[in-house]
Amino acid sequence: MIVLTDDQARTLHQLLTRILLSESYRLADVEDALVWTSPENRQILCPFDSMWSRNLAQEIVRELRNQP
Image (tube, rainbow, N blue to C red; front, side):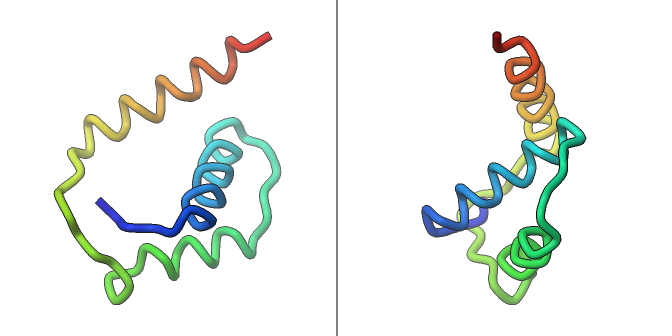
């Protein structure tokens, strides 16, 4: 797991949601996310299972698309 500040987590959440929904996003947010998640800036607390992450992302997109 990557440790982020609250502001970083909000920005990353918004960025990933916009990417998954094919909506426009700021290039600066992509650049920031790359810096925050680079190996030099990471604090690994526990490993992420890639299948679990992918399933979670798909579920989030499904829920967002089903909102009225």
